[in-house]
Length: 426
Image (cartoon, rainbow, N blue to C red):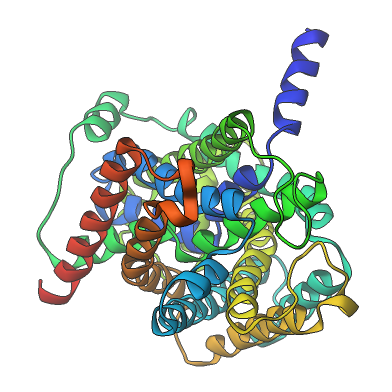
């Protein structure tokens, strides 16, 4: 048993940016979108997560491979090889989507905290914004993420709940392996939101930059982007890391969706407007406790707050990587604040910009779904750019896309484009 534990520990110790990217993908926006999908349509969309696993894996693999091979972030690669208008469009789309997403996440964290301590919503938003900015500036992200990943384990409460409620597993299996689609606006909007929260633009920029930093930390690459050594073994290790991150992300998402379907949907809660409604999905797990509702709200709040604290620095960081690379600032989370003041200033600015989103009068939980829809639409042109880079032999050399990556990558682009067009015209 001890040998197995050491092997498992050693296996997960080898995982890096891909695992963090997958964990950040299940942010508050993702939790809300998966919960809303299960609440609104029951088990109907269970097939979506099986369908998108290879799509998100390949797109993130392409994005990460760009950083691994070039030693540069995505924005810098675009700047050096394509027209400036493509660069500025890509960076603008990313910053817009990320600031909206940050704002929605801060609002959801505040709404979740209010389930436990009834302070005014505004106070909680100010508290979380200040705390996150200080943590981003004072603590190296890798140390910060190691601590916060333990908070994200609360999401496995959804996994446990599925085995406590009366789950119609035959219905779940049929919904998982037999796709079902409805041609109405509500369904298509949630479909686009699911695409946007699963295949998110900010992760396209985050993972290449993190792969580059990982190489510098391990001394595989110099800070000047000069490659020390790149081997097929490192590519294989990167792909395993990427796949594990995406697989765990989709597995947790699947259980969130079917838990919401088996609890909220059957109770007639079809439209989640508040944090306490979303928390009802976990009540079956804690019914044996005297205050089941309070314990469910506690678990839900820990999950939202933990994933928010993990994801917001990723959102702000990816925006800062992109803008810093676009305008030539010193960048990198491995650098001290005094060495990259502009880079960290953009991180703080994006986080503070997100705070302002919370004063436009939208329900924090609904804002999470709207943020996912925006991501789903804005991801389309960014995937097109990634495909072009991944197939460019002058950039990628012998590590350019193979036929599997091209088929699945263009399929992802086509699906997301069709969904975005459907949202406009249906």
